[in-house]
Image 1 (cartoon, rainbow, N blue to C red):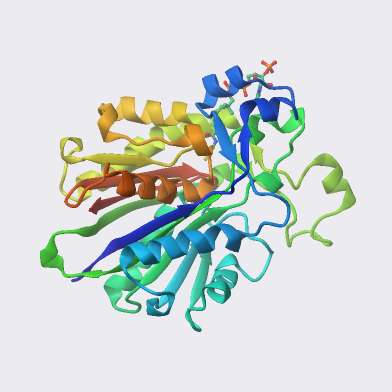
Image 2: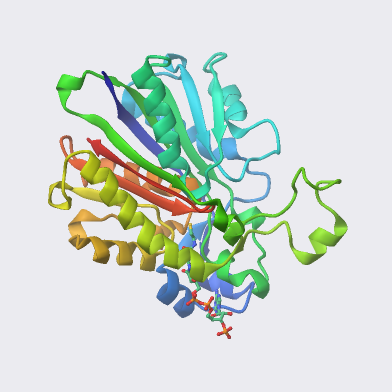
Length: 332
Ligand code: COA
């Protein structure tokens, strides 16, 4: 059976830099608190009127260029986001329109922080099944418009941010010994309300009311301690399961890119897997937690800086809202 491989990557973050001191001007927090608890030094937020396409399109174009392809070479789009511009249609539709790629299928998937890993599994399966050959996968989020920027929302507002990362996938012959080797994917809906946005929602009529707005049901809500506790156990568990299923051990792994939830979580994952610093990549200091975009942004930085080289064994692992978590092993 043939394999799929990532043939090109790219990313785009908004120009607007928001420092910890900027946040301290909006809410009761401090640069020291944010650095100590999350490792974040600054993040990027959109300015009013910027859309998902404004971030996803440049990321997609970079990924296409790196893959040596045109938009018209694509057969499908998979768009991972938990923060679509509109309730419907999905962000993939707007990206298809902006790309000028023809009437190709564009599928949105909503698996939050695990969006890129779950999206990769969909794209990989399509390529392997021969249904589509060349697929654009995007992880993109605009979180800044969905956070309570008062002191009441400070435990989430200091963490989440905006950005987009993209990858182009295509088939490679199995004898080339590169490409996506396998996945480990999970969901535990018992924790659905531990990291969620209650409204607007179609179980309400109207989908959001004055009373809901007044109590902040439209803002991202998080039980930070529960998220932390589960993330530091589920990511190492899942990543190890994926590495083992692919027939390797951690000694074989050149690079782990963990979802950039929080630097303390990444450090705990590294410690529990007993990995060296050169085996783990973090960039949350500069971008915050961009949900489904963290992994493809980090991936593009690793590719362009030479941190990830052809032949390397790469592991991606993610954990987030749902709870949903998963991992992927790739021979680069
Ligand atoms: N600035 C200053 N103080 C803050 C603050 C902020 N931004 N956010 C919370 N606090 C305060 C709390 O109000 C609390 O004050 P109190 O003791 O007077 O009640 C104190 O800091 C400790 O709050 P707590 O929530 O217990 O802190 P914590 O040590 O659990 O750290 C998180 C909070 C959010 C940093 C931590 O729980 C975390 O990192 N969780 C994981 C979050 C994450 O990664 N989410 C993404 C998943 S994809």
